[in-house]
Image (cartoon, rainbow, N blue to C red):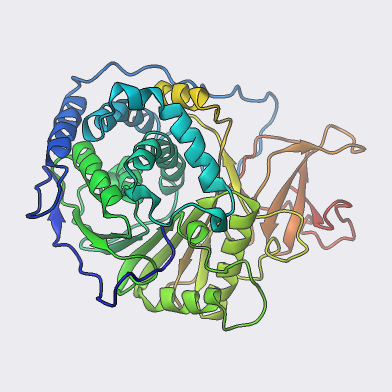
Length: 455
């Protein structure tokens, strides 16, 4: 989660593997053993049902629109079933884990909302103007991060991980690069109960060890005794790439690294070198997952990385339903590939802190790419081949009779305006055109020039 910057010529020394459960202090290190012990006790109390009674979510489900609804071929972000309501319940109890692992003095709690607001400003402005690469080494910033950004990221990432076709085998080696407070590992545990019994090996790498140690304490409290093995490595990205890995997770890494991925066109840039390095670090059946905030800048960078990966022999698995050029990655594209998700499952305590900081959430937005190397099986899967991925909300189409609804999608014909009389589709849905509605006709969307397709 920081810019590659060597402070000494000595290579980074990986920490010894740590079996999760009660966290043991390492000799000569200012350990968080007391915080870890308290967090473990809080986690045990929560798992035993002794924690505070769950409160109702501050974000109830939106009422369904009346009338006939379209049924997608695939729903990437389901609103029912796992990880709901279990994810909401776990996040409601997460406040107790935070209080035990990272306690705040009363004066610091009084300033928490301001610290969250200041950190949000620093994270969203131009990186060149000042946020230190290893900002999670600062205690005040780390406390603000884990109380606001971490739980929102757990919900946002959990929504994605619950639906992605990730099936790491027993003994799989997973790299969490730019791990921070182990956001990816915690989100995977929350969203994928089916993986909790597998013996998975995680290498978590970051240039700020303090954030990783706190994340390990939180994960140990959350999971208790588990077959997952966590190894913390003090190394920045991309120096931590070794492999082979069955899964490489880059969560908020491309955004914070500023690797020049926004540059397009010629080979030889940082983006192309990175694509080849990532593919070389994957096991034959390995997967690469890149997740970023759903901003225009991040969406364009992911599109650029996708192009470089495909040129290097990789394959796009999701959200793409094709292997052609990304229509939203062109410099003249009016939009970018991102998905807005509901905030269902957010606990009341997080909603209260967000309101106090003046940063309430109406939706969660992300851009992502799941990719594989050249040796992976054919992609995308047969269920979504020939479909279009919805990348916008429904919107009315003025001038069209019978209350037609439109939404933008991406598929075999590139960017498309998907039209139907029925509503009910949400961003991330994969839909198949109606017979004869493949977009071969001359109809174009006057705003974007996208081909118009009837569903």
